[in-house]
Length: 132
Image (cartoon, rainbow, N blue to C red):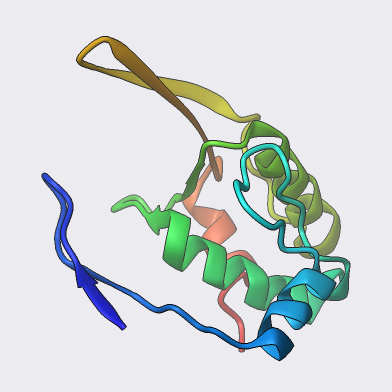
């Protein structure tokens, strides 16, 4: 486990696992090897309501947040992946997210682009994403 620091960000921990069994398991689940951009998909093993809810909780914890007005917002670089998440939220949980909206920031001479989806209203929070 390594304690890392990034300019302008809080400390975070990075865990490195050297296990062929864990590597094979993540590969079996569909986690891409190497760079993830354009290769992410929701794993087929979570395509039931209960498991997808847990997957979505983890996604919100890592790549999203709950706004003060109770909207749920998920931020990702991969627009295709966000579209897949949005469609599955509607299909499995009856929770509607917006179409992925673009955002960008210029740092030096490089422009970084990312996308976000958000729920339309606070009522979606009560719809059960965080049911246990």
